[in-house]
Amino acid sequence: MKILMNTKEGNLKRFSKITGIQFERLDAGETNDAVAVVLQDDNFQFNLDKALGLDIPIVAIAGYENSENHQYAIEAGVPDEAILIIRDDVLTNQGEFQLHTKKGLKLNDLMKLCKYVHKKNILPEIYVWLIPEPDPEDKEIWSYKDSVAEVEPVEVKPVAKPAINPADIDPEFRITNRQQPVQANKDGNPKGKQINQMPIEDFTKQYKKVIAIFKTDPKINGGAIIKKIAVGLNAFHLEMTENPSSYRCYAEPINKAVQASNYGYLTDQEIAYNVSSNTLDTLVIEVDTSQNILALTESIMPYITHIIHLTGSYDKNKKDIDDWLSMELPIHGILPTMDEDRYRKQYAGLVKTIKDIQDM
Image (tube, rainbow, N blue to C red; front, side, top):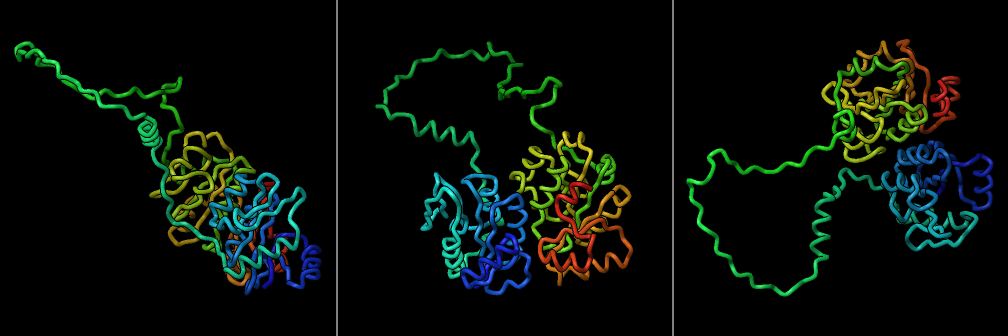
């Protein structure tokens, strides 16, 4: 067994010497017989996405229970027994690991958990469908029904009703369902952000800065990375893919994500978005590299100000980058999710961090 971890090179060497087990960086490349450990830091979600792409057991040190990082790890499919959280001064995986501490995680304790997930081969479990939440009104009805005390039945005697003369009924009278009035804002529009659709070219050209991030490796789960870039820029996140999935980084289902955040997606060559996005100056586009999406992207190339390639394995994606450069197409940066040192050695100044892209 060896351990891949997001920490300083000096720490990796020291941990290897102390334990006798090889410690390497998350983007080391060789993953045979390895366990990935993702430590909580400012780049936790980015590093967790790196680890998810390795297809190996993962231990996620996610911080406090119910924190943003904890929720992200759960949504990413990391099993509870492989997530360490802090609950009432106890570091726990919500299973057999219960470590009372006020200082942190010891190396020996980390080794125990790594050996546990390695032995059981505990891998992330990606859900393709989630059971929807019941309608809140249904919950209230059942709650009310359960709370009503049972009472003895009371015999109700029918009351005789006077006969109605048909001649007395107004022929214009109709019984209709009574509709509740729609609550509106002061401007007369219904409450909540309305979802609109607009042709992609018209939508794109209204922004001053447009950053297109091409997912060079289609297997990369880039939604969280691109969301972080967009949030840092106070930008709108547009997902141009054939099968949108990044909305899960904001909310579910997809229409709720559109209404609740600065996120939109491609549908029938138009963009679904909420009206408040018109106030933003910057657009970050998540571009799938399928033929259909790339063909559609050509129509908005005149409005794109920066092009970034989000890459995975160096061995798999080097040819894609070289082909792009050989055609003399514009490129402003490469954002590797792994093998960063190899990319830096080959492409020098092109390799960027999330902060570099936010500062462009």
